[in-house]
Image 1 (cartoon, rainbow, N blue to C red):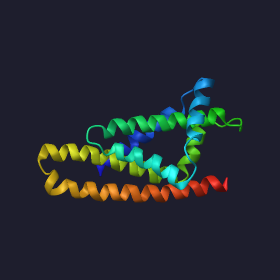
Image 2: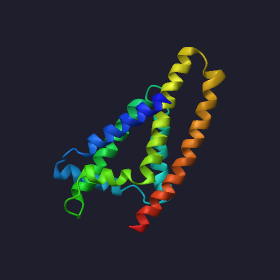
Image 3: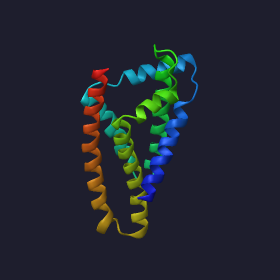
Image 4: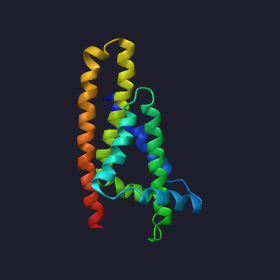
Length: 163
């Protein structure tokens, strides 16, 4: 549990830092267009989020992917804020708004769980107990993350359509 909390705090901190990065106009436009290129359907959002989470489960690679995806998401928030038609919206303000939605909490819980499990797999291989204990946690964690990210995608589409 402690590792999960530490991972959650680290990933959220990286997200917050990246959301405050000042991008050049062309970079902000390019990143913003990439974000808008993700299908705004339940399936499109779900596929994007599950791909990220499954990569974060990979032993050894998971933490690096978690850092990368958090930073990349933060940059996307910064880019959307900088290219927004609404003047005065900053990346940190947009992140703060996101923090008040269940989407952030659901998705970052899933991503943190995936990274934590990636670390646990490495530890279990070192302790020679993957076959007896850890594989069960891995299966439950993957199923939980996939199911939860589907619910999150539905919420996200509902939120987008209500705006």
